Length: 148
Image (tube, rainbow, N blue to C red):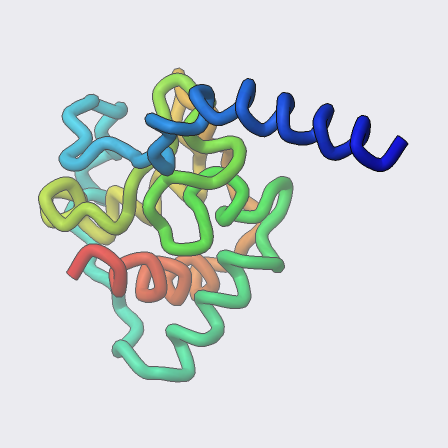
């Protein structure tokens, strides 16, 4: 009976190995060339008013990973901000890859603020209108660390 189990296990492993032979971890596109709706001019021109500090980055991390609602940012954008969260790669268009500096250097703080606060029509990005403005700004500080 023991030999039978080993033989079945061996057959399953051999049979499954081609399925994983070419498997690479999924990656978000960099740069991302898609166009999302542009924020109103008064938002686009805004610069993060909060000075960058380690404490603010830590607070942004907390919001990103556990305090944002309706859905934590990490589920779509991934723990490293690279757009590889378990929901992010399946979304159409895929979640923004914050770790891609080629993409992020073209997105203003104000554009990010508007996208977080109001959501992005035509994408899976929901509005986080329950977050206070200061929470969005510290979240932007945290997000910016990946693409710089």
